[in-house]
Image (tube, rainbow, N blue to C red; front, top):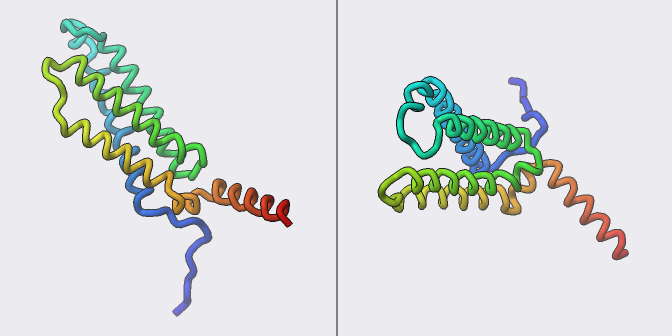
Length: 155
C-alpha cells in the first residue's frame, strides 16, 4: 500500500468553517430574496409600503454581493476578511432588525435578537481568537516576521 501524505496547506478550525457556511447561507438567502423581489416588483409597487420594493431589491442584492465576497475572502484566507466578517455580520443584523422594527406593528421577539447576537459573537470568537491566526497564513507569517524583528532588535 502506498502511503499518501496530505497536500501542504493550513487546517481551518471547525468554528471558522461553521462561520464560513453561515456567511454563504446568508449570501444565498439575500440572493434568493433579491430574485423574489425582482419577480414580484410589478405586484409590490401597487402596495402601500413605506419603502419602495426596488430599494429593498437593491439592498438585498448589495447584501448578497457583500456577504458572498466576504465568504470568498474567508475561503481564500484573506487577512482582511478575518477582521471584516464579524463587523459585516453586526451591520447586517442591525439592518435586518431595523427592517423588522420599521415594518412590523409589533416589536421583534427576543429570539431574532438573540440569534443575531449569538452569530456575531460566535463569528468574532471563531475568527479573532489566537488559534485562527494559524489558519490565515499571511497573518501568521506577518506575526512571525514582526516577532523575529523584535527579538533581533533586543539582541
